[in-house]
Image (tube, rainbow, N blue to C red; front, top):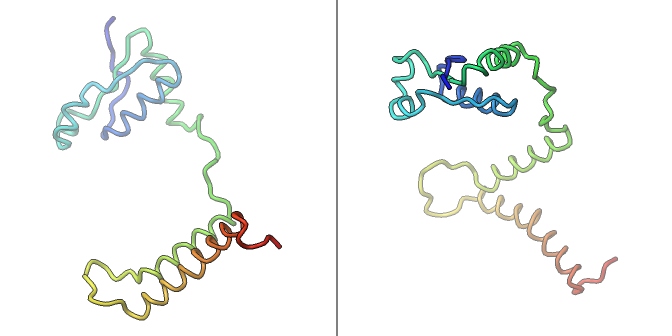
Length: 145
């Protein structure tokens, strides 16, 4: 069956997202100029953008779905938002990594500086010792209290 243009996108990733969205709603579509655009990304604009194509019978439904998606009809609340209690833990890990590594950049150090020794000690104290204690307790070397 003949294929019709559903939409044009400036970016190959946007076009692929549109194709995946349409596939999730039962419309078979594909990116027509994907090969050309991925070989030379500058050609994406030269050819007028990437075309999303679908069969003629699915054309009106596909255009309607993309228009509704652009209007925000399928938008949801951010279900992936990190709860506040997890944010504090992530910050602690980042701070601990900064102390342990020192963020000294790409230069090669000849010897460890005091900040590195302090960071190494903190890593051992905060992670290795509790982990070791946990496993020794589970194996029965340390009585559970």
